[in-house]
Length: 522
Image 1 (spheres, rainbow, N blue to C red):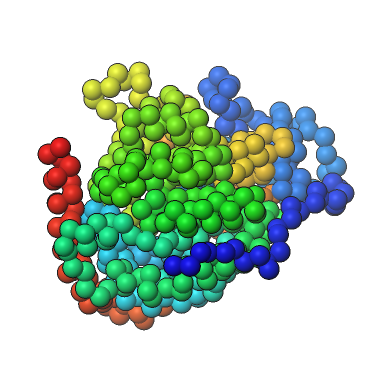
Image 2: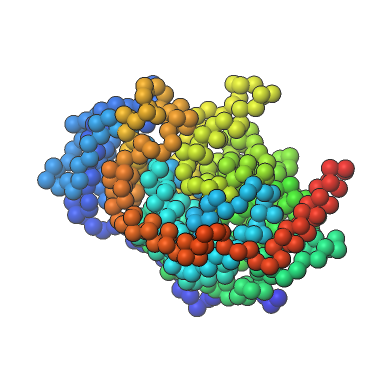
């Protein structure tokens, strides 16, 4: 492969200048008399509070009637009576094209699960990608998630029509989105199988690098995507660089991902040592542990987020903590695919920046962060661990807000209800069963609320869900189009599976037993 070059004819992104619009010309929203989640207050709650939002930021928060504003300037007044205001949650790892693929697979190890995902004969079009992303955004907003980090894979690699379609969906629905197009140029797991004498027949998964555009073209498309969309929609939409994973990216590709991230002053998002097989293959082919390898490639730094990171070596958590990178914990998909358990409490104790993610709906089956909160709150209560060291509800909820903000590169601007913060917040109905009777709000949020109490959602200073309904998009029309397209493609059964799918799965299963059995004997 020839040396890769960045598309130098594409202009640099320049940071947008400060907003010169007079404060009186910006939209004003006043929330009156609500309860506000307050981590440092007794009972973790402040009652009878007003919140003034000007433009895309929170201007003031204080006791009801104490804020200064011109009542004639208000564009919207929201009653906060019997309502709890919380920072919007952030889904810090997902794959938007999987939103129409929920309930399509039994529980399988990741390496086996990937094969039918690529071998699915579902007819992807940019329109279907738009609908899938919009459907996920709808589900997230209506269940209290105001921002998403989308590690966007497409059936054609880094493909401009698909990337633009997904970003347009996020623009239209009104969610905050950071999109990291997944890019890869190798598969060390398949290489490991070939080296051990296994044969992989023709299949969309094993042949994907031949079917996709050359990696040079994909890098150019990625750069053009960043110049077109980064910090668009007044900063609500952003672009990250998304190397797919340690064993899926050559050293040369990681170098170019680094160059892109530095040139456009943005972050990176990457899968890291998700399974035991990945960890062993990385050691075998790269000569070191995965996190240490990323550190040597200068990937480990603030602005980088690592999805999963389950199979860690001694010292890895300390290395992540010192680097300033954020680790995205995905408890539902980790269990769904049998990948393993991330040591959440130890990571928090060591000062690792931890976010939470749903992962894609093909390995989670929904995009509801409340289900992620509850599982994270239960999964790490180990019977052999002193119960005083179990992770608390406040820390788990914080991972879904301030932790997610760090993954988006907005650690100082997002994740709290406070003056100067970006106005991404959610109003919950305290009359719902999940909050009756009301005790510690963190315990209710983590263990009781399923997402049904969400009534109002504000993103970037705009009300995008009102009385439980989207304000910017016709929900019924979206749902109907998704249903019609999927039924047309699927008829009365699932899409067909590409030829040789089960043969490839069988070969990879043989490889898993070869590698992991050998590892267990060492």
